[in-house]
Image (tube, rainbow, N blue to C red):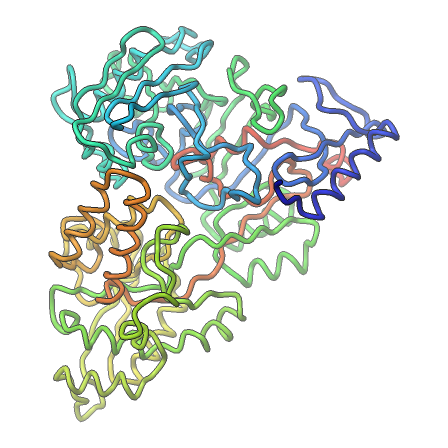
Length: 599
């Protein structure tokens, strides 16, 4: 028998009381408006909480980051981060899963929680070489030229995968640089064939545990179905004005570096996984506004100009919002560390493991967590992998390795002496550069530099824009160290690939044959169980070699106005990478509460 938390039992009891008093109804018909006195409630089946019943209509406004309007639309050229609610893939994460089982706060979806989107079902052959997908009947392209609402077919699927992978009539694979696309391209493909209008058969020459997730499009950001007629007419799908999809929204306006407006697709096929009787989306319009200044974003929240803010890394902002505007929900999500560092392993001094050990041992991360992060940080050392089941916990690491992750500046100085880097007359052992990326934690970088100065290492921080950082990284022109993310709560198959010598995202440029072999074995594993074990082993090995210098992990925060209903702290990409806006198709506005609050 499954354990039901007390909170859920009380929530169910509350609903029974509401039902008995005539204040509860199972749902609300599309287009209906209920007076405040007849406000209805439902139990969220994923949390057990009593919430206002879903209702239709209104405009929801969410914050989006700078550069969003410049993002790729066509997955052939890059990750389509602004069109995941317009175009769709074969599958997605189940929004209806019990949050006690899986909380949707990572960008990784366990296979058991994957459901069909454009695909209704699939079968996998016993040898895991043949995957047969049956498309969902009744799916149509948006009623917009040149698609004009025609049925979505298996031939559209074949066309899109052939185009991305350079198969069939397409001579070259797409140039998209995104890492997940490489994993899709690097699968040992034999064929992709539409055997009839509703069936696609995909075949491999060797089994791969990542196959299903890659073709369903939940963690690669590129397996979105683009309209073939648009590609043939215009040569590509880069222009949002030409975009036609099958999703719950259509892009109807883009103001460069200002806003993106999505309008409800009135003929959308999809239903809410929580409340299957309800057709999506709930809101008539979704507007994503671009506000680059953090103070301006917080001001917009306080003034109710925006309904939803995501990806805030400032603990001070979260504390301030809780104090000044307690009615605004602040959701805490532990996603990744943006306070770690990747030393250049190819050149002195960081090609010496004793130097790497000294750099790690010089950081008093426990004290930094108590002071700088006010105790809201996790200092437990970890590698790139953050999804449970795919890494070995620190307490299980070899004792020989664990000793180098303690704070011990005296031992650090001794290691530097032994490595041949004595203090000079000025007290400095060597000077190096930190190539700082704008997405990382600048204040922590300065704190770390101060600790390193205590052991005689002078670190000069070169503050770079994201574009400058990535240009320097990919061209391998940066010296010293790079800002590094760690404990990533996204696809572990992708994350472990970054450890490989040939990986573009191998920031430190390590070239370790032993680690390469471990990565190759993990990605070629025949079963998911074997893959998880091998990924964990590669991750621990990389940290034994100090592939990165670990810095603490602090939470990110999402903010929602009190009238935003249906949201319980999920990551906006929890339904799948590139599916950010599709979450908003499942949220609704409590119009009575909004009116009551004067908005």
